[in-house]
Length: 426
Image (cartoon, rainbow, N blue to C red; front, side, top):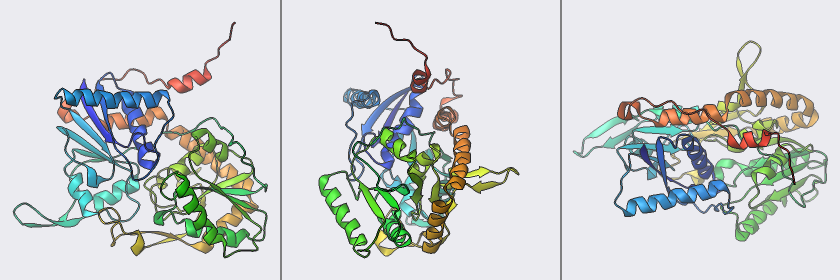
């Protein structure tokens, strides 16, 4: 039994929070050989999960175990640290850093230096792996010697997300005025490109009865954040006082079931994402798992799951593909140590975006059929069993701990219970 400390934002409502819970669910499949403990850390100003689910109670039990273990002077055999590489540190003989990845064309020098302090790195997409492995920097070692073209020296594993589907749960009191609508699920920040998303949408449909549901926030799910987000949206829409199209702002916490309801809503044609880049693109993936058409670029993290083979075996993106060019990131988007000023990301072409909006609007059946093909591909290639096994196999260092014992057969308990044929007796 190996004692493993996981340092991560396990209770955060954020992308890193979702990534943490995915990793923990995977490792939980091998609690016969892994004794999991948890240090819960915050992620920015994001909100926290408060629902008292079985998983929430399990996470709290891992935190309690850690406090007791450390209080008794205990140590760990391995660490898994789910956060940006700047925050990775050696915590055990075996250390693994797990980052949401890279949305640009270059990682910061700090990521390379910190990454080489780990025994292995996990990323969520092949885009992140490729950029991480090809990035270099000049560093000065302890003897003041400058090392040119310093690069990552440890193995990098790609661990995609597993299928994400929930039973649809209607949003109470939420009604759509028009029969034709689009959906965007994205935080409002420089990388997500929401200003162009909204402005060009309104320009395209301002004289038509078409809606855009915008599930967003700026930093948190607070009332203050909602008011600030409303003001930003009103500032954009002020340019179109005579518009007929309508925007709906969804702010705050909604459940996975609520999102599934939106992804499967008969009046919503597609999910829009024209962000400058994604580490993976979780809302895109969730929508694709539900068979919803996607309007997006074919670059960065989403390339891992939007491509599927055609009849000739050639991989092609099954989305309404928006053209883009790679250009230097905007000065206001630079984040020292994370988003490099000398890196680039995608700039979606506004005219191409509008053309794809119009194409989906005019031919919804064609794009729905395309989305069903993509859904079939994802359901066949991103199963929980396969994705969890990839995490566990990559996590276990055979050169240190020896061969990984064969696991007991994986059981998707939640799915098993849902499909169980039962009778109710008084």
